[in-house]
Image 1 (cartoon, helix red, strand yellow):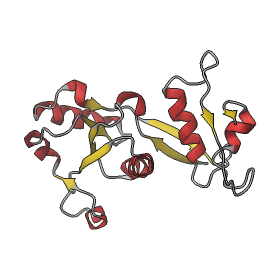
Image 2 (cartoon, rainbow, N blue to C red; image 1 turned 60 degrees about the vertical axis):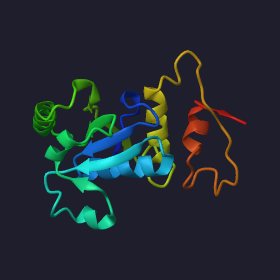
Image 3 (tube, one colour; image 1 turned 90 degrees about the vertical axis):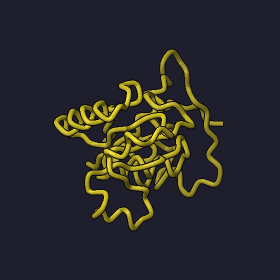
Length: 171
């Protein structure tokens, strides 16, 4: 079973300017999601190994975390680590650098997929989890989708899970 880390959509407003603090697999998952859906703008990625980080070669804007005290052009700092010890240390440092608590987002949401997913990379589970955090599926509130030009009803399908679970209304 694989796991993905869902960007904390419930704690970050759409269209916001965001700094990711951490450059590991969680940041990778967040970058893939945000690149695909343009939910927000990733301004910087703060990582302690900013000089040696191979992701700098991928044109990620990786900066020294301490330099965040000099920037004011972001709305949130999203902590991209699952380790409580590191999250606590990151929060402590951010507060010392003058970042207000309301700008620090430390939510971590794991999405397990593979056995439940029909899509190629678990996108259906990401969407399902994101919609759940946004309040859908409560009190009959269901999103609507249109599946146009689908390759196959179940093989590498981003909508088969929703059709099978009958959680979305198909048009």
